[in-house]
Length: 88
Image (cartoon, rainbow, N blue to C red; front, side, top):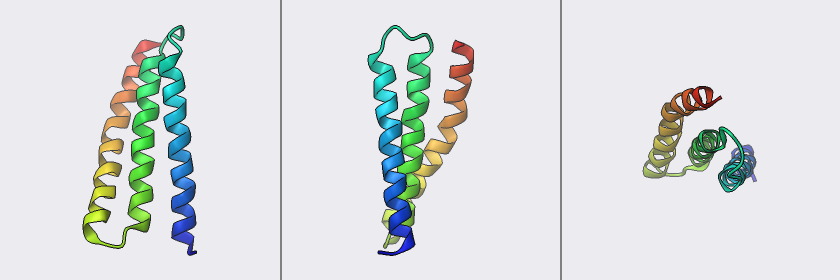
C-alpha cells in the first residue's frame, strides 16, 4: 500500500465524518443555524471525497470526476459560509 492510498483512505474517513455531522445537524431541528451549517458540512464532504478520488485515480476520466467534485466543493464552500454567517 502506497502513501496515496493511505491518504485517500484517511480523506474518505474524514469525508464520512463530515457527512455524519451534517446529518446530525439536519436531524436536530432545535438548533438555530443548523441547516446552513449542515449544508457546509455536506459541501466539505463532497470536496474531501473529490480530493480522495483524485489521489487514487488511475485513469484520466476518474481523475476528472475527482477534480470536478473538488472544484464544485471549493466553489460552493464560500456561499455556504456566507449563509452560515447570515444565519447567526
